[in-house]
Length: 244
Image (cartoon, rainbow, N blue to C red):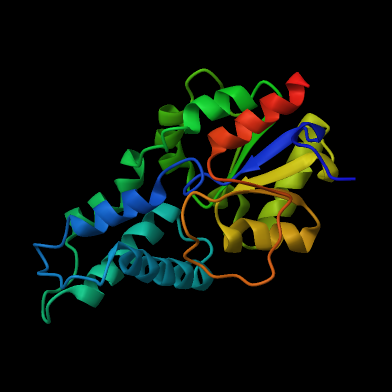
């Protein structure tokens, strides 16, 4: 029998890309250095994001204990270096700091806050994000209007970055220990196929794919239990279920 949204008791959220418009935030953080480094123009915005993702994934794999804000700044510096004119040098200390703090100003998608408030009436809301505690503090203040997250789990706390399955096992233990929610009652809710849905598949977790934009990381044979264009659409579907 097909599962319903109302069967679940907790949502495990990816944050950046699912709740927060991460792509625009990264793009603007890179573009601020365009004139200073006389950067050549990428073919399109997508190419620049792909370049950033390549660098970010390499850094996370090489040093899973590096604080996320430093990963962001290092990846931005490397991307700027790819497109900068020869001999342009590296980011200054102040520029590197500005890049690392760009996370603080990233904005939510238009539907995010209202959808979270509605979903919070039925589910425990758990953040499972590749971020550090300090950076997420700013994001949390931006998001929490009319609801509150029930638990925040960061890569900094766990000691590894998704798609490492340890992050999801840590989340499942927390859900059980703190809320009495079993594995079968957790719905992984995320935009990233690679970071969230692939490990969810491996661990036998149900998942909801929030397909906000075309996936930058191409993944074959990944499955998900539900698919929605926005989180607001998912909240609408839940409310429709509960009303029948």
